[in-house]
Image 1: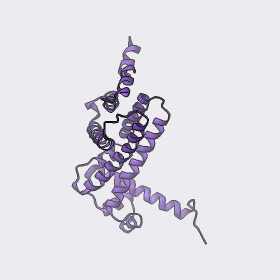
Image 2: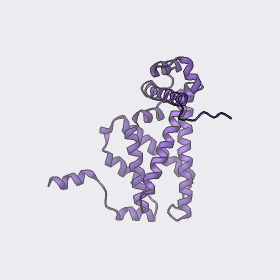
Image 3: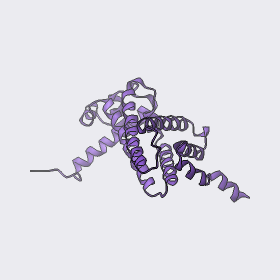
Image 4: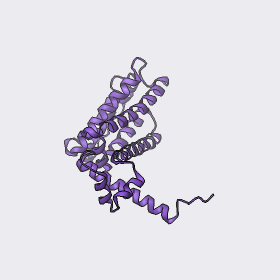
Length: 221
């Protein structure tokens, strides 16, 4: 059987075309939302024929969903890498918060897409937040078994509350980062994560607050 390797010229060309379509769609969706963009406009912005778009995606919602869920995969991977390098519950939570904020800073167009108010995109956005909440729920269940999460709290409810809170905060902050400092956003995420969680709350009290602004004051004195 003749299998065309990924490194072949046609395969590379196809991947490059798909990448241009995704880049163009990301910019257009961030500017105008799913409702305000057509597949023809995405193809034109990518410099390809309209028919070429349909060789890669079924329709504009398909490419929208791909952008959103690819971003979630990248976010989850970044968080896992950051947490894996941290030791101690508080440091893991801080690493998680920092990874989320860093991702948001580097992917503001994707954040605008994910948290848009476009009614046409509502089902995709709901699926994305549900995916994040489901992953968090699994982690909270594991932490409860390890004694790191209160036995009297429901992981399902907490996961959805935490994802909703984090999503709203990140959306609000990335719209205008001057609204709050990066340090304050991270510190808030860390402290709310531990609010009322027994041993973890006590561990948080014992950790000095990390604030780059305070470091700057010391250096200037």
